[in-house]
Image (tube, rainbow, N blue to C red; front, side, top):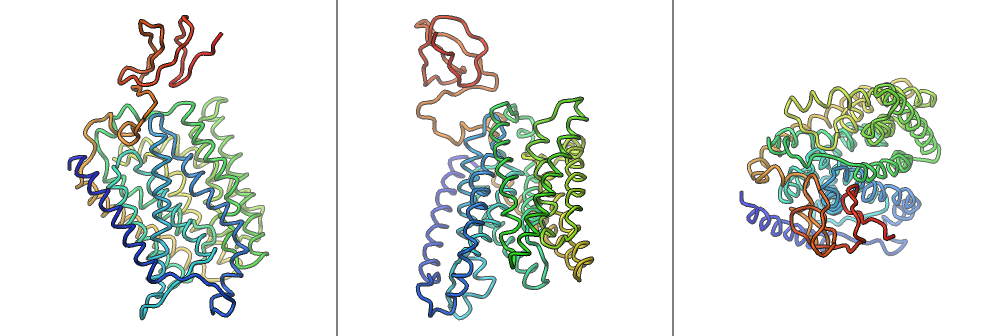
Length: 451
């Protein structure tokens, strides 16, 4: 499909989604305005969760945006895609959730409280994780279709797990991380474009890795709120916070130790960006069920180490199998999500009952996500791909630069006859006037100091 056609379809489809959302919200959504309303107690009780919502809101729109801005020439596009994907996901999650929960039976209405906002952000993070598996390989039309279908599958999976099976998953190991990661991996497996695998834009540098590391630090710090926001009471919330904190510390130290050992005294930045947060995912489903909190240290250290080993040795195997996992969501979210769900079965069986239902919930999430991702991937591949290897992972195809410089994969600063320094060798827009001395050590968009 020609790019102009794909762009036109994207504009039309995005506009249609907004018209539909406005109509349904206008007809069916109500605000609770007085204490006499039957739902007033729910709203007043859940407003106390607003600090948790703020933390998760930062994780969704800020941390995940920076986390996926790791490619040298795809930072602005990645941040923007996370921004609009998370927004439209929350918007449509409320509609589909209301439908699946039967709020529209007999043309009834639905309302939203802070508790619902938190669940909407969980769905948004799941869809953003899915995006990470094929980010930079798909155009806006493909992304929009993938996300809109993904929201439906996510709410269906949520309905099955919590309303039909009574699964316990306070931190989203199953319904957030397992689902989002495997849905994205299914799509990425089908969108295995040869040009994308060979693109010279699939590189990082110090600046882009710093962006990603900032995202990791935000995720690491706010995971405590993520895994405790839906707790039933203060004691459950305290247990979830304690276990998450201990497990995150363990995964950080385990990942750092293993990375230093494997690389002879140096750490690999990919390990610090990705493997250090697996503790929050591993402990998620059982965060409020594990009563022997020292075990969280053991689990965190062990799987932090295993995540480093996976990134080091198994990523290449996946690539040879045709799975070009762009952001490494397999080792960061997909496998830790499954393991977290299975570990929660052990915790639930030991301290409570019905551990087997946790296993069922884990593999239901995995199955719906992977099969759904593969089917959607086939649909998206039919829409075509980019036209050259240079158009993958490249901000130039998405971002309008009004006062910036285009630069190629190997930018070399050079001078013009007026003693002005240009960057790159494509279109030259922004000019920096500097003293007449040679400086061959400039980074992408840096200007030498005036002396």
